[in-house]
Image (cartoon, rainbow, N blue to C red; front, side, top):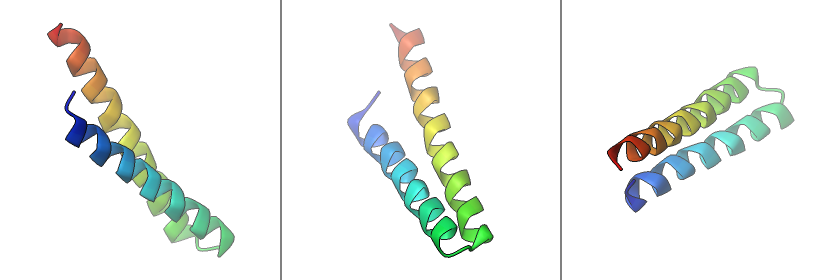
Length: 57
């Protein structure tokens, strides 16, 4: 699990969280959905990296 990929995934997750909160605050459902998708995508990528790393050892 490289540090660069971890940072990239965490950044994507954080950006998604921000977009989701902003969408909820402004009642913009499209922005809220996009943020949720981005957040979940970051989480899945991070889980994939962890699984890949676990099977390499």
